[in-house]
Image (cartoon, rainbow, N blue to C red):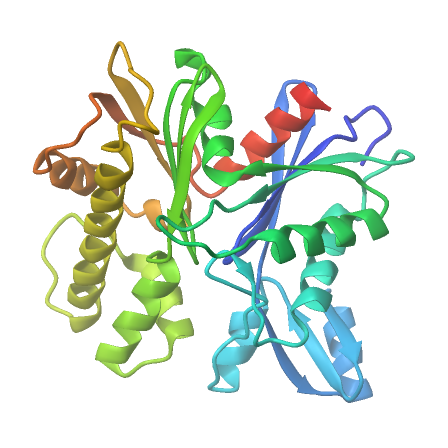
Length: 332
């Protein structure tokens, strides 16, 4: 980072990707790494080769941990699944190396930050709808990582970050939805004030795993194919696209049903005097035709909130990080 760049950072700590946002002048810049890893037996030859190709890795005992964007390629070569430090929006309790890998990825993204205690706002998911799952451990562990790395930190709800990123034109009033890897996060805000937030666990990973169970392929390969070629427009003769469409529509139906339930609770909802916009973000919302399919399914529902428009975020993959940075620049 150059000395004249703003040391304030925004970080989207997602199940699928960790995305960093910076601002220099009027421009936002982004870096991201896949929140995944795979392991190979340590050897000095492999370690040397990884260094020459500048592939992020760390050495833990007798293993090489290859993390970030290169992890799926190595997992595919080894015909195995990538390992995930997070699941359903929070730190994965079944992966003993989760915290170590997340820290390594964060270090690789923020290595150029300067200042005595650079300011950083990071995203946290909302609690599940009608659930009692505690997010205390997840957020506290991330705060500990940032504190050890020397950051002055605060957190922001993921859905609210979408609103801060995309709804300046409506004075930060509307519904932000982040379709991530582990969760779909929803937030309703009025004049930048969060009114209601929740999440559901049907998201990108659900689509990948469900499709893989039908096609008999690895979830990692399904995800790679989905990100490369899937879209809603047109007709498909191959099984993969047909199955992906089924589970995409299942996810959309589930989130619309959850929104209808949450927004029908008169005790929690304010009296909105005019229709509000809906913003769709996140990598799972990026396929062509997603907005149209979402809008069509919403129109078939007796939705309790009047909607003025449904728009896709300017860059669905970086929306949460951008909103976190805007929050940091404003509040910190």
